[in-house]
Length: 95
Image (cartoon, rainbow, N blue to C red; front, side, top):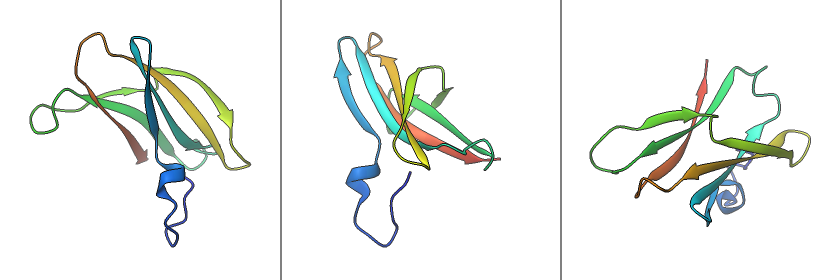
């Protein structure tokens, strides 16, 4: 996500979440050249951290992006909280 594995900088690069009205705004960093690197980013949801399964909603909640630097962009997602409790995570897959 843009951090340096040899530096304790995770707080600056981890996804961020906050409530915005009736939605959860979830922002993560994505490589600008993700497609060329065969990387697929997607948001996954679960209502329980112990039971149940994660649902991949992919990029369907994506509302926009903005360049951070020459390598990364910040991607904003809005996930409805109308259904109640949800846990959200980022999944990155290399195809």
